[in-house]
Image 1 (cartoon, rainbow, N blue to C red):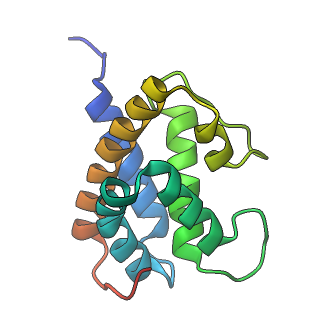
Image 2: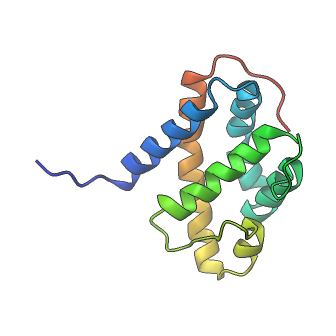
Amino acid sequence: MSTVRTIEQKRSEFALKCVEDVREKEFAGNYKGLVKKFPMMVLKNGLLQTIAFLEAKGKVQKSDESEKEHKELYKDIKKYLNEVSPISFTVADDQLLSKALSETSVVQYRNITSDILAFAKWLGRYAEALIEKEEKSG
């Protein structure tokens, strides 16, 4: 029996871990709402603008008490790109994802967008299944 896993299996496993990590936190309902809206935000505004929005709302380079669901989703996406994504694209811990995306080629940007949307689909499925409450998201 083969132990080779497909990219969908890897995405699914990583998304499940992300949702399980958030499930019991006080902002889980907000995270669920944000995850459900994220794909439409990307399709409407583009990945770069949506990532910049998450950075701004989550104030990702500060440790204040900002909107935690934005910071958490941003962290999950960045970690997914660095650890799971089949696309050869890594972002340093201290580098903003928006800066890295703005410096990539158009072809790679499109591939990253498709990959992130596929990952977001899994996040949405698991958030819907595992997080009971849903609150505002922004």
